[in-house]
Length: 302
Image (cartoon, rainbow, N blue to C red):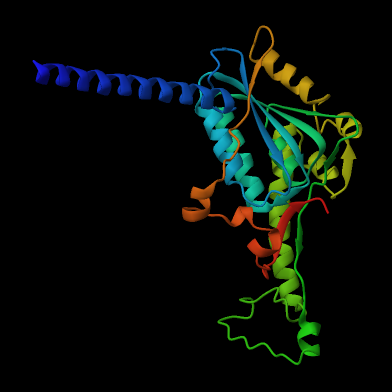
């Protein structure tokens, strides 16, 4: 009899503990979901995803992942791409642009660009892939063009009495070397690359803004425009704020009432990341980054 009571008490304790653990886990998940802006916990059908494209565009990975998540989420009816960037690397800008097009065409998502203080060069390149571009009257946009730059420290090496030794398979293998002046052949070679990248940019503007190529070229001498001027030149569609862009996106997908905004989850970095992950993002820039001696081809407003 005593054994039966003990066994019964044992299972009551185990069952109670399991129940408490299950409840605690459920509550923790719900609290995390409510706190996590990308968890999509809300049951609203009026959802608009907001992707914030800010800063210089050198690494496209995080923005592409955000666009992919919203593109794959059937409850997200439209995406607002909030832009506050002077542009960045040519390849990175093109990668984000291509993902914008893919999400629009394959996932059938409406994407509206909202330019804040600045949406220039590579950032404007990306905006040209959206359904609609909205910018404040005093926003800075445009800067359609390509720039290549690097630091030449040849004179510094001479001053320090250091000599470089280079063995190469062909004359152009070290074109743009930071330790010497460019040859005429190298200048022509690099200019051809820049011209190719420039034409790609102009073609994107022509396609996105429904211009012919010559009209697109007329706006593509590297100058910037205010939002007001850009509107008069049809480089953007509407003058307005982020809220205006959200309202436009909501109207385009026929959302009734106030849309529910969904933001990507904030990155969480803790002890586990420090011990087992890439913690370089937590270090000061000078400690995490090494000088890059390569030529940087950029769609960038300087």
